[in-house]
Image (cartoon, rainbow, N blue to C red; front, side, top):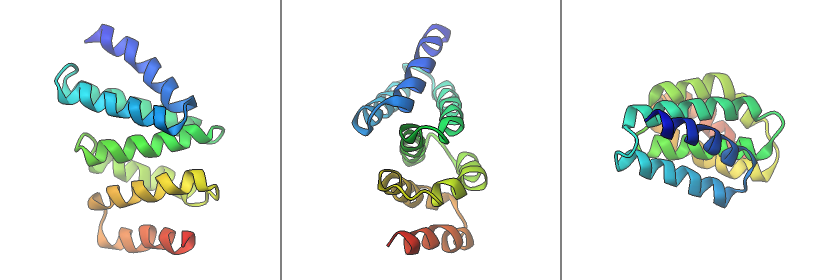
Length: 139
């Protein structure tokens, strides 16, 4: 497990930070497959990808591809049940506002898709306050 983690962590981090969306999506899909097929235990894989997500959040200020990658990763892992309410709450409290202020279409589309997916972990109040307000601004 350690050899796999040591080799995967920097590769996935870089892939999601500097690649285009199709490559990012392929990397995320591959990690989901690795976890689902028990090549990497679910807990270890989720922990690894939480760390990757934290790195992407730190790089979001300077890299559009890191912004897109973090949104795609959060969306995919929530959709697959590999991330839960804790990751969504952290995103909403620490990173939501910076993504909501983003004006680039390249960021808006994955942000909106991510918001739809993570909504299942939000209260009705949070959905009406945050999610609907973003849709109104972007529409």
